[in-house]
Image (cartoon, rainbow, N blue to C red):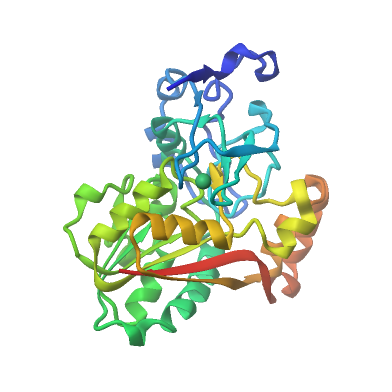
Length: 348
Ligand SMILES: [Zn+2]
């Protein structure tokens, strides 16, 4: 496999990805306490790792039948510890993106390798407990439409569970043997103690689970981030019981909002190694071996302060908006909107 080392290019300012990575997290202002997390990320860990970019085939059909969609657009010096966090403020930076003409997925090519991505997520920050709860409720309502199709509610695994907000919803929906797995330490540290007990800190590894162990496996806003999404789906298939389901939520690049915002859409992001559409998520799940796949748009419900963070306006404007919204009742009002996410439920 060909590889390119980032620091050789003048645009990368001669720095490796990691040398520019701040290791101290923000304190105060409602951010979570990262004491344990900063200790676990030593300076030597960061600087010893060079970010290499590798040439890549389509992560679904494994062909090279692709055309350039957008050239690389990133300045590594502007990334911080939140670059690989969930529901962060978008930086509008991304790797070079190509569009597969066979299966409609957009993917980063070249892209970082598996190990570098894992390292990035280990240290990613987290400040979205409030929003993760809103998202979890929305997703659980979608899942509930399919529960009558399932023989029982025994066994559920949430991959990339963050602070475990969805685990709480599963328990409330009478699921038993509920588990989550999350590679980043920061969200697990802020999980509610009775939920944290269900979370395994580390990357998802199929070998950690028995075949046909779970009725439902879920994976929200995570499939875009992983190095090999097809392998993740094949692994999910193996650990799902016959008649069980794999439930994915991801961005839809064909959604109206993404098309209207174009390159200013927050879905074009440095942490998204691939971006799906209804057709490509179907292709992904069918290629992995799932039988019945249903894809539908998601209507997300979030407080106004969250929506304000996504606006394609300068950071200064967002700071002012954010202060106004969090200090008034307006910030707590919720707004439901179809912002270009899709739900895919695939049955084994
Ligand atoms: Zn393809």
